[in-house]
Amino acid sequence: MTTRTIIHVDMDAFYASIEQRDNPSLAGKPVIVGGVGGQRGVVSAASYEARRYGVHSAMPLKKARALCPEGVFLPVDMEKYEAVSRQLRSILCSYTPLVEPLSLDEAFLDVTASIALFGDAEKIGREIKDRVRNELNLTASVGIAPNKFLAKIASDYRKPDGFVVIQPGGEADFLRDLPVYKVYGVGKVMARRLGDHGIETVGRLAEMSREHLRRLFGKQGEHLYELSRGIDDNPVIAEAEAKSISQETTFDVDIDNNDELRRTFARLSDRVGARLREEGLVSKTVGIKVRLADFTTMHRERTLLDPVSSDDQILSVAWNLFRAVPLGGQKVRLLGVVASSLEHPSGQLHLFSEQGEKNCKAMRTIDNIRRKFGDTAIERASGLRPTGENRDRPYDKGLSPFSPTHEKEAEGETAKGRRRKAKGNKRDETAKTKPRS
Ligand code: DCP
Ligand code: MG
Image 1: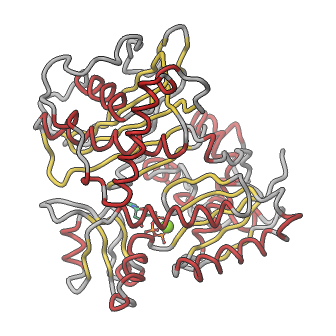
Image 2: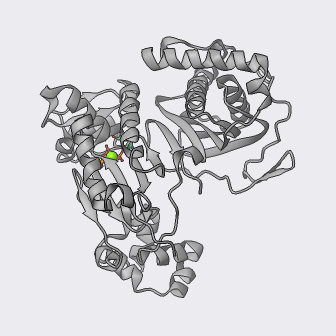
């Protein structure tokens, strides 16, 4: 097994802390960020003061209001949080190029090779916390461990403002009393199944043999066996190698209006496109996520002959994928757009053709304006176009047929195992950079 030193950084009550920072009269108050004032909406972030009332992320705002009537309720301001996220990233990247963001407010760093330059991992971890406090006026929790799995548990262990180090060899002691649901990937269902077998803690799990766990839980059982011993050999994947960029939104009220659905896809495609261009990447696979009113969640994706990074191209594929999704008469609760199979463009035709170059410049100008004045400063006509049949298929030639199982032949290339797992209803309006799996 590889010997590594991993740091996991996770900001405390991220959206809520930024709001408290920017409005000092909110310091020490229960602050709840979420929704945009619609009939429905969920809590995105709750300050630690609000958590004392039992308020937490993903809880309906209505319930949060009932639990905490004196709370200060604020709408989500993504632009602001994304700007802070970029500042955070630049602090993290000053210690190692091996930074893998998991969401706006958390990232893994592999500092194994940085130690010679910056001092040991504890010194780096402390310095990151200090810089976050001094430069961003916020607090971060830091976990340090020999692998990602343990580092993530460590950063969560003493939140907020936590600093926890798990030394090599200290894994078993650390994990012994940890409840199984704290293990990344153990959802409610698995925790219940483990509970049915009398397994409540990781220590108890570690007493099981590999065979026994395999018999009970199949392949997942083997994975649990490894994790219960603190074994995790997954490397940190630096951002440039990130496997996908995605953007999703949950509607305040479920919708079935085609124009509105298409406008939403246009907005999500714009954001994904902007991120791709910001990173200097193109995408060979465009996918969508659709969650229906009854929470059925579907993923569809299509692998393209030529990689794309333009908003229109992404929208075109996303919309065509969406039109083939069986809605069964239900309204839509959540939409997402994901670009994966990311590459650095090397002499890609449409990007470097004369027209492509012009389009590229135009898109970058739009990106800059949006960055300055917000997403709605410029709306693209294509997002507003009527949703008639085959209106927008100029990029469709060369697209592979897709199958709902995600296992498909794409122009001679097999797109395997791209199935994207629904991560629950985690983000209300969120951007993600996913690691290579
Ligand atoms: N977020 C969201 N919807 C959720 C969960 C989180 O929109 N269901 C957003 C708001 C959070 C941010 O992502 O501020 C970071 O998520 P975390 O899970 O790290 O939660 P916090 O940073 O708010 O709290 P903490 O990390 O201190 O537990
Ligand atoms: Mg956080």
